[in-house]
Length: 610
Image (cartoon, rainbow, N blue to C red; front, side):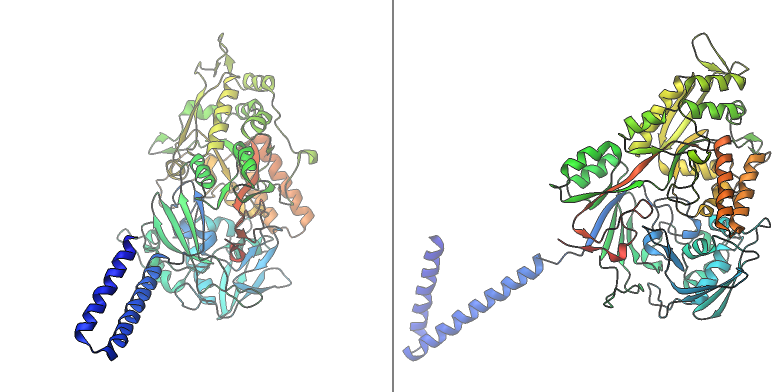
């Protein structure tokens, strides 16, 4: 009503003004011009407001990770999560469902009759994320100057060593698109091993590899750490790193120069951005997913029933890929070495840990079925071997693999046979009267591992062993395992896959991930008096032998021996594998979930439908 009065008053005043200024013939024309002008201005202002307040949001998928990335330099990376699955590709890739080898940067490859010369042909027109051409020179640089360069302390070199001589392949450029690899002897896992390693940009990194810092070390060793501006890093994968805010998020943006196209010739990937929210608690991640803040979340057994009830209302699907491809275990520090004259492990405890009866007793004392029932809510399976259940080389108990079914009495007998004794109060002591007590660490924030640690502590208490369970931050834990080497027992896991040789650096006594008896890596303070057990060396030798064996039946038999030795000597005490499950919003289309690849292995094919 007030508006109509103001409008009517404005019209009256306007007409009175026109009557004073213009003759009758012009009054209506001038009035019409004024009205049209006001209406047009109002329309334009309205459009401007619309443009200013309703921008089109980018298509994006938001997920969470438990901890910050540790480096953006692939060659120096030892941990997960890392950014490289999105940002880099190698010559070949694996299908996330079938595990079959597929072309990636290389469109084809040829293997000579002697199996010692392998020639890759790159796809035409490949480019880096800065628009520069990706050629054979980049491939040769990546191998000769980074992965095979002894001045670069990279775990990658361990899985490229061939035969008892531990020789490395030779790599040479034929022309801009063809690269030839020469191996000293047949190497069965060659295509999967070499093909999966990310290719690095020679035009950016070569100067950093070839020049030294003030300490005489390659500048490459300090390149592309997490403080580096993402704009200064060059990628070849489906996404590039756009932004990293420590303790908050990692943002990936679609790589405009990525090579993949769909059948209609449209560029892939389709989703513009991937966002990793850094959330150090799985409970918090679950809350964020349920409130709509995340598009996907790993489904642990303890939350499966809750999410299953909300599946329809929350408009998401829980995907089940069967047993996870990785392994979970506890491991004792068997390193008897000294650093600066001081033992890495308390000598009293080191004697316990290196006592086979002690390790076997601990294996028998852990109630895996209760872990499955209580911690995993029935959604898990026992794991008895380091090789993934999806691998054709996995050895099963029915094929003769030794297992440690829960048996407290057997555990106590082994301890007594190993020289331990029980007090009147039922506490375990060694032969010198030292109470048996050690520290068990795991990464804080992983709710399932924390629950497992609590039960392991309770189980071992039943055989008189006191465990100090201490979840710590992942960064501190990694530093202890790879640098300090001063830990006692840890609860952790390794990722898995089809090819056992990808774990060669775990089993080679000098390997970068030989964590239960770690040798210092390049640049670290040396240690003395380190001892490599015969069985430990035997596993490393068998991995070498299996890698050169081209007959699949014989190769499987060799890996069977490695699994039998690991189960007999227990450098890792394997526990339970959960089912690989993820809840993913239904707006994410094209998901082909599997235990091997997860939900986003085919990220380039995924579309969003809101």
